[in-house]
Length: 329
Image (tube, rainbow, N blue to C red):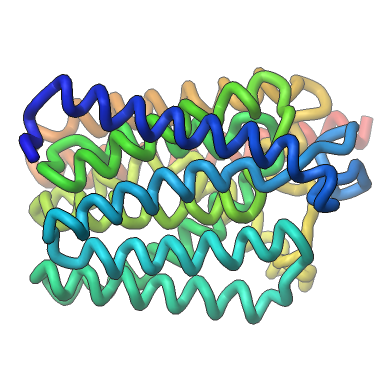
């Protein structure tokens, strides 16, 4: 397989896009008959019943990519695919009938172990192996938490995959292309007005595939540059981390559905498309900073990453305060 062949890359992306789009349309038609509908409610951001589980096409495209990598003999590809299968299976089951949190967490930890084994077989450093194990539950749950308004989870995953592909070689870059193409196949069904939601199967697949790309990027870059690789994820991780942290401090059941994320609080006033585009603009800025700091001295790269993280946290805090003031008024 000629990794540098543009024609082959085009066919690879076209196959991933078509598989994702076809599966999304199939689920959109099947979901109402199977009772896979998200109904409006006090803890939901949408106003009409909407099919869920459309992100199964993204999971299928990822599984197909790992199958090709395993057939080509790439070390650890089979284990990575097994991890994706576990996350997608748990998500698909939850989209049909809600799973208890301990079953979902168990599937995520098993998937994390699969990714860690894959990295060990690929002779990654022990630090990368441990980070791979941690990244799976963190990113799977983060993308599940942000899958609450039209287009947000998919668009953020596309941008992050594009950024993490920077500097990757061979299979890592092709996995990024598969994720980008699969996301593009799904996104027209979900944005600017959602005709189907990704569901747990889709958000879980996005989170797991991003975890794979992240650790492959860590493996390809020197540790001194690792903070830069987190920049594209900052918008999602800050919103999720600070929202959950506040809920924990208040003694709330943080794992239950709610409307306290900044994007959820903005959506009623601004509309889903505008909020999704605001998050996308901030992530594009993060990617630009990452690219600009790649060649900077290590101290400047770390400082720039820290400043961007603090700026994101400040914007989250300021946005929450402004929404709160409007609600009180």
